[in-house]
Amino acid sequence: MEYFEHKLIETKNVARIIEDLIKLKKSQDKINLYYAHHMRIYGTDREKSEIELIKKHFYPDFILNPGALIEDYTGMESFLLYVRLSDIIVASGICEDSYDSGLIVGKGVYMELGEAAKLNKVIYFIHQNTLKEIDSVHELNTDSWRRFAEVVLVPEITL
Image 1: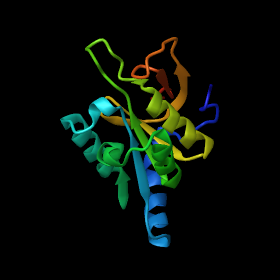
Image 2: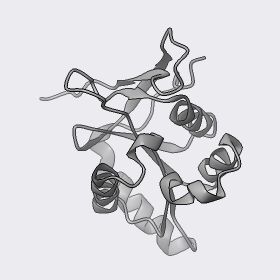
Image 3: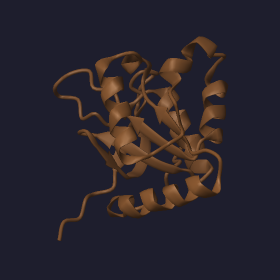
Image 4: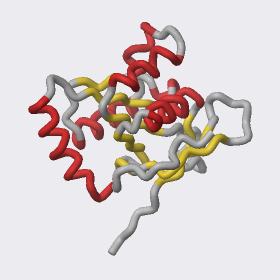
């Protein structure tokens, strides 16, 4: 199932988006950001590093981190509810070895990205310690929930 057929916001517009979010923050009570990442990243130094990257680029009032919410876990539907309540979704992939591209996501993150795309949420992907725009997400030929889909990033254009 393809969830990312529409064009998302271009990466070069991050500064404009941040300005818009600051204006939005002044006009509304809260800005919520959902951090979609693999369960193997929960509680690790990588999770802490990615949260710092998110805080550096966005100024959310709340970061909804499923790693911190896992005690309240009642199935994927609870995490999808957090996606629905969020203004921005930032996701990351899993890297299991030095040959891994970092663009592989588990089924849970795939479902969260799909829900966010259906609702036209602002979505970014952390790759090589930077925020990137997602072009598409493709299911892999696998029964593995851990390595379920691959993210395709919008190619960067340098002038």
